[in-house]
Length: 427
Ligand code: GLY
Image (cartoon, rainbow, N blue to C red):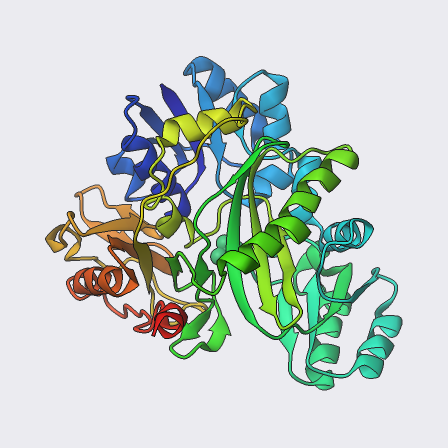
């Protein structure tokens, strides 16, 4: 089976790694890939925005299935283009990907279908004055969100009204995030713990992967600026059986039926960020893809054959698919460049990856490349994700941090408290 994976981060390395564990022999192509994916298949120099070249590559190379990792090509309609050419693809249509691509759309969708989420108002590009008035009336804390895609920088939690005013001015007047911030959603702050729920669906039937928790802040104790994610663990015990049942009944099922009745059935991977509030689970946001770094923990816990799972999704035949998960827990500790999420240097040599125990850990690459001489060097902010599966969270953490200690590059930073909420829940 010949499979093309679109993307080049830790998430796509984890997808490639899982496919290589299948009983079905696979030949993998990853576009653009990274220094880790090149060990599992061929990195291909295709631009994710160049849909025509992707279709030509798929036809020429007789690709059997395409898996789209990141949100931008999905929002831009790459899955639709591939489906028009009858190419099996994992990923929702552009119409369905609006759940992530437009916060204004997703909030209105939730309101229309009575799905619990924070109260909100949307302001268009000519409504800065009204938006400023609104945050002054509402007070703080309050959340200002760019409606469009903003690579994780679009949601600003404001502790004071002044911060909210600055966020609105920056997005709407100064266009700090370009057109993504011309329409803005202002919503009430939700208190609670956030959990990432991953739904695999053909639009009708669905299955759930283990609920995970990300660690968004750069510093231990959840301090410092937001990042793309400094680590993850699964399953997240905060989502108890009762809360899971409530989330399925009030969020997941109404979302899938709502997308159907709105004429854009959701086919692919739906990632729902859920806040466990004192009033029950509420949606923080929808994403139209796997999470990063959550993929680096949920795929190692998936027992079902990954090729079968992805093919069932791509063909829209998920009914009767019994998804199986491994018992135990998984963690991922992200090693990042010094300065990340601010400016950082690249080109630092990475050592120690080969010294890690591959029976206990798997190293997923994000910002890496192999030099022509075969050495591994840093190319990004998030560099590596060290993932481990254990009988329980404590054991998985021990395995992961043992390997983290062996890996070195200049300025490497990582959090030493990944999984702290899970450990506390279990204590
Ligand atoms: N875990 C955050 C994200 O993938 O958007």
